[in-house]
Image 1 (spheres, rainbow, N blue to C red):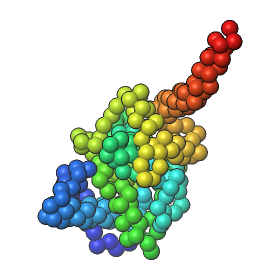
Image 2: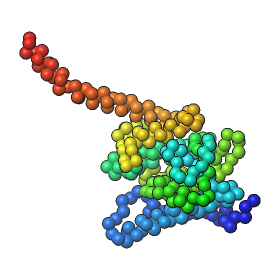
Image 3: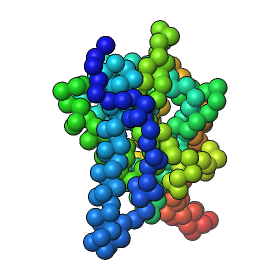
Image 4: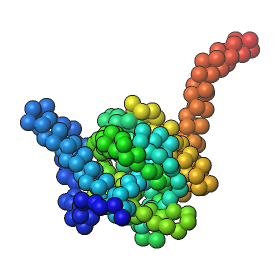
Length: 261
């Protein structure tokens, strides 16, 4: 066994993420901007310590559990993907975001995992490349902890051969202001129309469910229901747009027909 300098039990004994890492808009005052940078540094430090805990629990191996868009668009430094389940958690489109897949005026929804007995969230487990670990963690911090309601955790994951390991993963923070669970119809209305700097919210949902279909041959039922409702809503929107485009021509046709009569 590798001689590790980190005490696993001590490493896992963290306080919850500070409320200052939520998506509240930063103040224009210089002191507040400084506080935001401190919060970002603290989030990255927490991520690094959680990664060290995972390596300690795994005899030096860093695993990353990915379950949203990360399997389809992995960060550099993620290697050897394989199917895994995260027992005790369920996947939900429950994180409200004002960047990437939404805007402050029209936020989008992205996936998070929430505690759930007798359930298991579908995921991909990646090896973290040791030579680029610092860059990998910095990239994950920017991607997953930048104003989102995620908490980095050492998650137990199960593999097809029955083995279990710990993996660094990001769980939704219950009670966070940006953790919202909506009825499928309400979530679908948001996903159908939201978009941000990384693309449309609908494309995010397709990316997330695409990896599930390829890896598992099935999708998370609640996300699949939202996908079906989004597809139906976007179809109705296209039909209405075509009808509105045709309406002037139909109006002229009606006038000509009345004149001929």
